[in-house]
Image 1 (cartoon, rainbow, N blue to C red):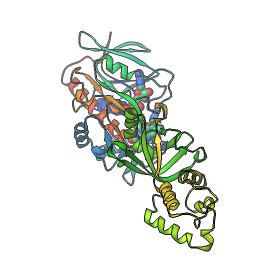
Image 2 (cartoon, rainbow, N blue to C red):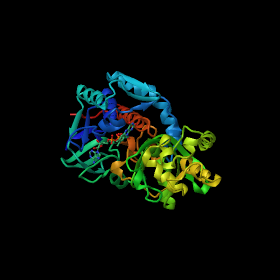
Image 3 (spheres, rainbow, N blue to C red):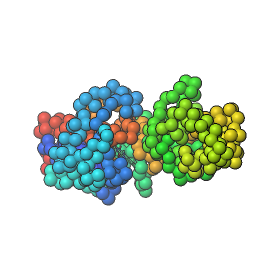
Image 4 (spheres, rainbow, N blue to C red):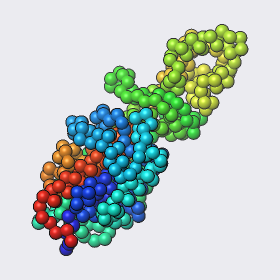
Length: 422
Ligand SMILES: Cc1cc2nc3c(=O)[nH]c(=O)nc-3n(C[C@H](O)[C@H](O)[C@H](O)COP(=O)(O)OP(=O)(O)OC[C@H]3O[C@@H](n4cnc5c(N)ncnc54)[C@H](O)[C@@H]3O)c2cc1C
C-alpha cells in the first residue's frame, strides 16, 4: 500500500492552515474532509463575516487546564502573525475595535484565501471522505480507516474540530479516535452557548433582545461576581442567549455540571447607575404626571415592553400601581428587579447550537508544536485540543496558529529524512 507522507484529517480552519504551511515547506499534502465542501463552518462564523483573530490576545481569554501552554502559544503566534498569514494569501483585513475581519466583511473571502492557496500548492483536498479510525502499525506508520478504505501515512495531523455548531448525519468520531490512541481527553461539552432554565424565565419575554449586563454569581463565594459581560441579550421562553451569555457560558456550565445550577444576575439598565436610577424615579414620583402613571406604562420609557411584566412580577408590584403609591420598600424591590434580576440556569443548549466545545485533548500530552509526546508523528490542532476562547476571534486564532505550527513541524521532520512521496 502506498504510504503518504502527510495526511490531514479534517478540512476546516486548522486543517487548511496546516495544509498550507506543510505544502509551502514542500511536502505533498492530502486533506480528508467528511463534508462535501471544506471549511463549511467558516462561512457561518462571525455571523457570516468571520472574526478571524483579535488584536488584543491574552491567555486569560482562553479556558484550558494548561494555561502555561496558551501563554507560550500566543508568543509564538501573535495576531500580527495571523494578519500576515492572510495578507500573504491575498486577503486584506480590517479591525473593528480589536476584532479582525476580512476587509470584504465576508467569511467567504477567508475560505477562498485558504482553498485557492492550497490549489496553487497542488495540495489535494478530498471531500466526502469520513475517517472512522486510526491506528499505529507495527512498522510505525499510521493506518487510517475511512469511507474510501484504508490509507497509510507517515505523519497525521488530526484537525477534526468538535461537534459545535454542526448538524451531521454521521456520528462525530474524533474524540473516540484519540481515546483509542491512548490520548487523554477532557470530555467535550457545549460552550459559547445558550443557558437554559425555566425558573425565573418568563414566557412574556420570549423574543426580546435588549442591551443588558449579565453577571455570573458564584454562590460558593457568597455572591462574588465571578464573570460578567455587557451586550445584547436574547430572551427566549426557555433561557437566555446572545454574546454576553455566551461569554460566561463556560464557567456557568461548569457550575451546572458540579451543582446542578448556576445563578446569574441581569442588569436590565446597565447604562443607568443604581443611584442615578433611584434619583430619577424619585423625581418622577414627585411629578404630578409621572407619579400617577401606571408603572406598566411608565416603565416603557426605560425597558422593552415585554420585559416590564417580569420586572413587576419579580418585585411583587401590580402593573396598575403608581410610583406615588409605592412604599420605600417596594421602590427598593423595583430597583433590585431592574438592576439585579436573578436567573437560575440549569442547563445549556446542545452542541449543534454552540459555537465551541470546552474540553478536548490534554495539552500536557503535546509538544509546543502540537506533536503527541507518546505517539511521535501524530499532531492534533484547533478546537479538538483542550482550549476554548471567548467570543472575539480567539478560537479561530487558535485554529490557524496550531494548524500552522503543526504543519511546519510535520513538514520539517519529513524533509529531514528521505521519503518516497510518489
Ligand atoms: C456559529 C459559529 C460562529 C463562530 N464564529 C466564530 C468567530 O467569529 N470567530 C472565532 O474565532 N471563532 C468562531 N467560531 C468557532 C470556530 O469556528 C472554531 O473554533 C474553528 O472553526 C475550529 O477550527 P478547527 O479546525 O478545529 O475545526 P473546524 O473548523 O470545525 O474543522 C473541522 C473539520 O473536520 C471535519 N471532520 C470532522 N470529523 C471528521 C472525520 N471523522 N473525517 C473527516 N473530516 C472530519 C469537519 O467536517 C470540519 O470541516 C464559531 C463557531 C460557530 C459554530
